[in-house]
Length: 97
Ligand SMILES: [Zn+2]
Image 1 (cartoon, helix red, strand yellow):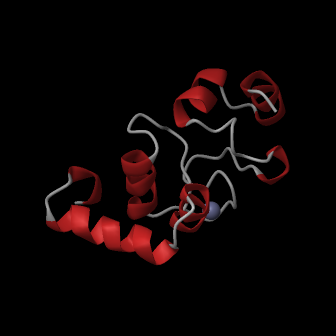
Image 2 (cartoon, rainbow, N blue to C red):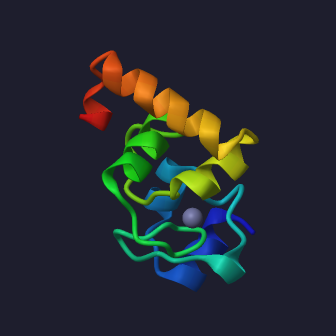
């Protein structure tokens, strides 16, 4: 699915799909374009979810994965993502304050 097709299906502006890097890895059948929800599974997001998405995928993103879906996308364990968040928080990263 290209970003134009994804935009037509979801109502997400093409620029958001591109900036969030979503077209390459989101299956359109399981897509939640609502702000505040994981784009992939629809789970309500917490601050660490959007912070991690910004840190690991795209600082300028406006739609986000939850940490579970992010770890699947990155090909690492959820535990590792949480460890990294703790690390970044301790070193003063403003995305996780
Ligand atoms: Zn998710």
